[in-house]
Image (tube, rainbow, N blue to C red):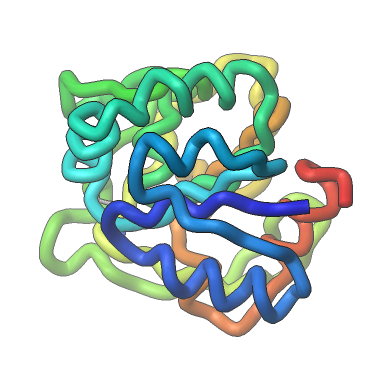
Length: 189
Ligand code: GLN
């Protein structure tokens, strides 16, 4: 069982530390050749979705990764990662993998002062700490997307088949239940 962490930009290191803590093997995806190693799951970290999307394309990693996600590769996407997966954005004409049938709103809480903390239930998990940093939220979902969490009425966590996508940063809090949920329920370890 090995999880690949997209390590082009953003908060990938924190996810790697958590995988280590939970006893899961990981590798970094930094260049196209890394995609030829075998891995059983993928983490798309927070950061800047436009920078990440452009780098993925420039490095020739975009299509192969999109194929893998379409093919059922388990994915945990946080914040910018959610934007990369979304079918579309209501306030940005750019879209990337488009494997997750939701519409996101980028920087939905404002650009500068948009960072805050909340505690909310997440699917079967109760009182999960949620740190939001210039976060998107999900404006709307197709009906077969499972909504896992809302904060102030806005959708901040969903599951669709092999994809678990969230607006906030679980890697910045000490609660490991979302990573455990990913490893157990999505990666089936
Ligand atoms: N605002 C970033 C974007 O639109 C996401 C922020 C984050 O990942 N913390 O890509």
